[in-house]
Length: 73
Image (tube, rainbow, N blue to C red; front, top):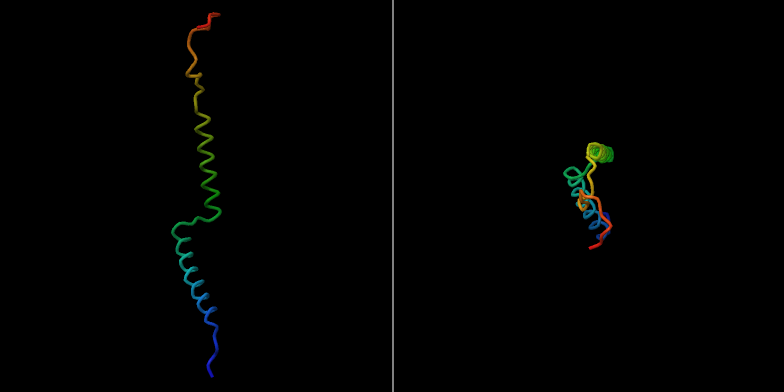
């Protein structure tokens, strides 16, 4: 006699296999390893610190060059 199979299990197993293949393809195309993500974040943080360290402090653009007098307008 032949082996009896559950059609629901067979259908779901086939769907899982198809989804697994698609996921593996997407990981290859779009995914980064955890170490790669951490290295990229560290590089972004280092670049931000470097830019902030070279930034010149500016005065408030609304401030005027003349001292304020006691008059109100």
